[in-house]
Image 1 (cartoon, one colour):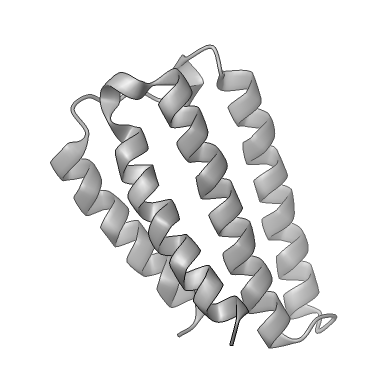
Image 2 (tube, rainbow, N blue to C red):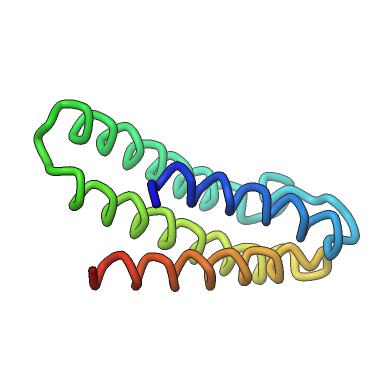
Length: 114
């Protein structure tokens, strides 16, 4: 399965879980952790851009690129889950992110050991 397909599945799963579980919408940018979240988001965007350059430039092979994409996405989701739990626990957003990071972690481990 391609990485894009995995991310599409995660996006649809996130939307469905949010609709079922999240009681109120509060952004991490509206909390005291907004500076930390912004820095983490900038680092993730830099990771995405560098991976696109490395992947499309042919600098790294497709198998390594797939593993790095999955690993980077899982790490970002793990950090987001921690921040959701710390700064906005009342919204149950951390439950949605926990499901996503668990599924992403299982897929990442499965792909890493192929």
